[in-house]
Length: 224
Image 1: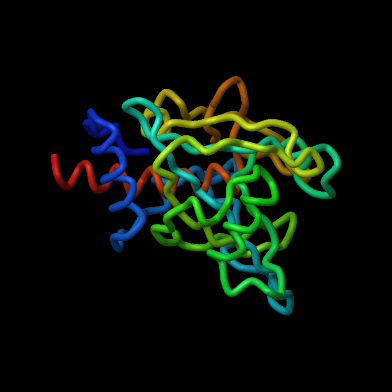
Image 2: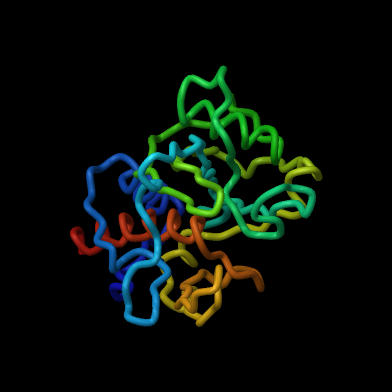
């Protein structure tokens, strides 16, 4: 990943940067993303489902809010009662329901259901490129929204066991990123992750966060 650029100094700077990273058209290179790789260094994440298989559609929410001179976002620890990805760190989100009008509606509804943040309290900024999640066969669209104050969290225990927070300052800090060799589905892989509050944020969540980080870093490097 690229070296860290000079970071914003005020919360207003962070808000401006995050919004630009959401709304501007920015091409992010694969080497700037937290992608799992095999022993030869090859990317180990298909970008689409296998031929003949239709992915389920879903969305997640990057819920940004100010905290002092930082901007934060909540990450959920998935309940052990869920059928998939139990105990993993995720962004609020889930499967698109028939009544949802699109990824924004899905992400806002799921955030409300999981951590009790009302959609009306949020300003939606836009979406990031969708990603394909192999184990659960989901095509996920990340949605970015902003709250002018820290949201009051009301966890749904059937879906969320805990909530941790990540600042955008931490997201841009290279020291937050680590890589370990894991064996997943019978294959040894180099797995990058964000080390946050004693937890390892990896997989699809790390990929989405690294896309957002790369976009912010691109803007900072262009304006330096």
